[in-house]
Image (cartoon, rainbow, N blue to C red; front, side, top):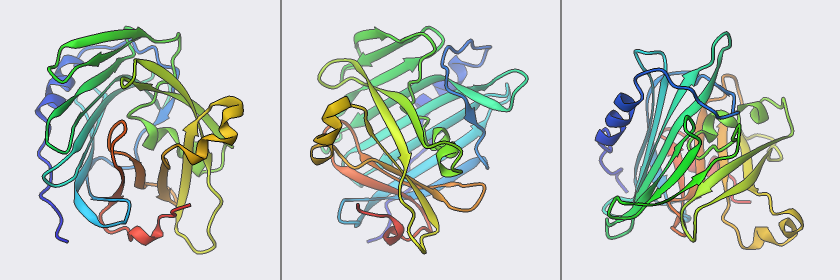
Length: 260
């Protein structure tokens, strides 16, 4: 199957960047690293059978004010899609970043809008918007939040380098009521000849974790085993209760990705 055309730059991302062009005062407690390289990363969307179904693109850009913008668009050609964006600011006297703002919006198989979620770490508020763009409600974030909807490719690097065994964070959801869900990520067992490192993550449901794997989607990120451990692929539902897809950097064989 031929790759679908590359997604266009997102006009709403430009508006996002402009709206945060001044100084920000993020309240997130996440401490993230700068990506190894800037620019666009072409990728391909695969379905659960590992058939190419569309095009994806990741872009990381350092702004004139020193902030970092990250965008990701994942598409099924002629069908559903999700667009995510995040803005980060460098912390003074460190080489780390913290999130300032995150946003995600999706279209269903009929290309109809499903709504949008946004996380404003400066004000400590997460919001949900309906398909018509109107606000549906908001949720106060906890102090020093660890909400990481659009930051996982940077958040998981300490796991890849084996500097820690687990990373705890939260994801914000709008479907079935606004809520924050605790998640935990771990490094997967290594294959003998696989040049990738897999990080698996799942909700932290306490004792229910024993039963949860049978009912939850398979969530993974893959990174190059060699430094600087660039992002190579991830597996997620395209949107809440949507189809699970692989998003794979062009040039990475999809058979390198485990199916558990």
